[in-house]
Amino acid sequence: MIKASKVKDVKNISTFEELSLAWLEKKKIKLKPSSYSKYDYLLSDYIIPEFSTRTIEEIRLESVETGISNIYNSNRTSKISNSMMKSIIYIVNAVLAYGTRLGYFNVGRAIFELPSNHENKKANILKPNQENVLIHYLLNNRTDNNLGIMFSLLTGMRLGEVCALKRGSIDFKKAVVHVNSTVQRISILNQDFKTKLVVTSPKSKGSNREIPLPKFLLDYIKEFNVHKIDGDLFILGKSKIPYEPRTLQYGFKTALENCKIEHKNYHSLRHTFATNCIKSGFDVKTLSEILGHASVSFTLNRYVHSDIEHKRSQMEKLEKNYKRAAQIS
Image (cartoon, rainbow, N blue to C red):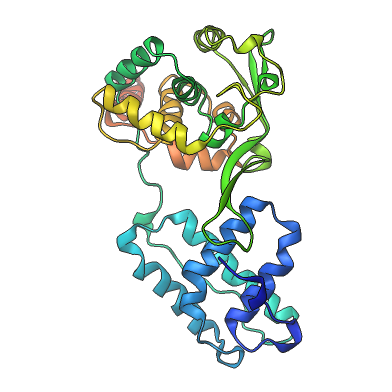
């Protein structure tokens, strides 16, 4: 956690660390609390430890790119994620641009190519038989956690989005759910080791969306009497306090253990939903909008990976054309 007392006046900056802190302080008024907390964490735990000893005069593009490479390589054993590295690279470049605007240097933009095998990891999903066992368990064990799990499994909603659902989010007549907020646990500014739950806008503009609810899920929701509670209450817990994401994650872990399914993270529910949609013939544009992705290309790269049998069936379509051509000759 960065202390406000460490932030120096922009006219008296002498190190990359001081420049980074000044940049973050300037950005604070424009950032959502969750984004500020994320940037604060990445600076404190990854960027500043690598660049803290470098003075402004020592900043060169080559040395900055080497520093980014060191961050990646030194954290490979802890499986630093692709998205985290992209955020680190963004922050470093934003700090460099800020230093250029202040007239300290003009080093340009740092570039770091992530190894190709780091991209597009195969989504971790439930197998069909595991999914059937889990659904059977959820139907026969009605708890707030299991309602949240069913939401994610049948709509692809993210963990925080499910925790942020209020009674008013669901239109039972039109059978749709409106996704327009998310719950996150973030660090309290300038207080070490203290956090709080906050309800913020979703991950991106595309994440604000309407999702049609299948009758199967709608009937399951009604069994919890959700349609009878006040519109301002959160669905999970039926309270004015947002549901704790960690409680829902723990509930999913418990459900898997009771179903004798190996450990999977909560996000595997979203991956399972998306994979089922692709197998069922969803067009990618529709699926992208349901998932709230920023672009169709992301959906394609993330989920559209044909198995060998599907590839074989597509090749057989070509074979029919060849046979017709042979008959003509």
